[in-house]
Image (cartoon, rainbow, N blue to C red; front, side, top):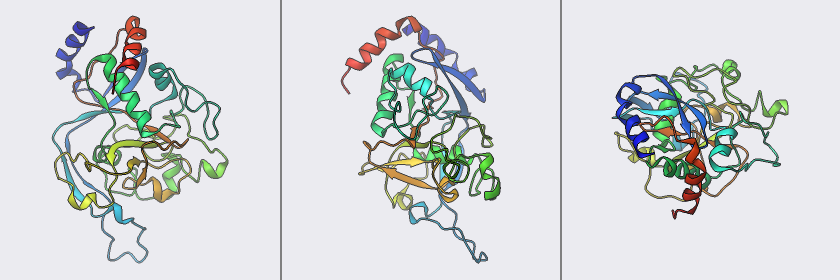
Length: 292
C-alpha cells in the first residue's frame, strides 16, 4: 500500500498540469476533479453602483469585497459528492426514506451534517494514509465558483439564464421538484465545475463570522478560529435567485441535518490516483475503530 502511494506521489508533478483528473476513492468509486490554478480575486459582494437606481440587495456579511491571493492551486470536485461515492466509502444511506431526497447513485449525498462531512473526509484520508482530502475553505469555494468572474453568478448578471446553470426556486421548488437533482445535468461554470449555484448547498471548512471579511488576511485565509456555526455555500434547490449568487453565504450548526445540505471535496496538489480495492474492507474497519 505504502509503495503504491509513494510511486503515485512521485509522478504527481506532471499530473498537476492536467485540467481534469479522475481519482479513485476507497471502495473503488471514481471521483472527477478539476485543477484550480493559484491566483487572486475579489471576494464578497461588490459595493453598490452609485448610478444604479435599484441596486440588488447585499447582506452585510458579504461586505466588504476584499482581495484574496492563493499561493498554491488545488483540485476540486467537478460535481457535488454523489450518493454512490458516499455509500462506497461509508456504507450508509443517510437520505434513504427521508423526504426531500431521491435515492439514486448520481444524486447528491444529502441529509449530511458538517460533522458527517468531516467523518467522510477522515475515513478517506485514514484509508490512504495521508491528509489529502478536505472541505474547501470559504475563500477557496468562492474563488472556484466565480471562475474568474465578478458578476452576480459565474455565467453573468442575467437572471433570465440562471435556470441553464442552477437548480433553484424557479426551476425546481416551484415545479414541485423539491429535492436535489442529479449532478452535472445543467451547464458548468467557466472552469468546468457543475452545480456551484443551487442544487445541494455545500458545507465548507470555515466557522461562520458575520464580520470576518473586515479582518480576513489577504493570503490563503483559513477562516475564523472559532464560532458557533459553520458556513454553507452555493444555495440550494429551494432558494430564490439572490441566494444562489457567487457571494451569498449561509450558516448552520455543525450538527444540523437537512435534505438541502451536501458537500464537495477538495484535494491538495499531491493527489494519489487509487486505493487497493482488495484491502478496502480491512482499511474501513481500521478507520472506524480509530479515535478522532
